[in-house]
Image (cartoon, rainbow, N blue to C red; front, side):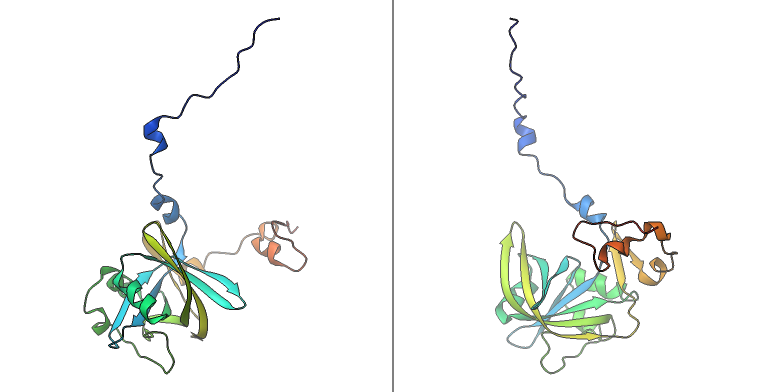
Length: 206
């Protein structure tokens, strides 16, 4: 009987084993809305930063998660105070997005904001089409970021929202994206969300 040698995969190259994947181009290909997280410190001084890394977690209780750089001064205030406001920017608020991403010390002097009774942080009245006042319920540190889970206590939404979008390292406007004709009926992506559709069931409408 001929001898058969077992096939053993080559050992991975040591340098490849420790090489890190660059997640940035991957996530840049996932367009999102743009938000600004705002809060107040113990001296009522406002703090804020631009954030596009956010998601809903649960509807009951209404919970969101925002991921913030662990070294961020704004994050330190959010964790100390346990509250913040999540301002979703409208499509004409690119300037505010860039301003709060820059870390400029006078950023709150260059935007319009107010602090309603019971707010989690400043509401950017001229730049946000929706604001959620949030209370921190849990944090998870991972790598160079911290995931902040927060229960939404109040939501303020303007009529006819037109969100600011960001992807592939550039901005886009919702009004322009929404002007694209809807898909043909046989490619309707909402089919999986209709009553009777199960998780993972991508039904085709004909």
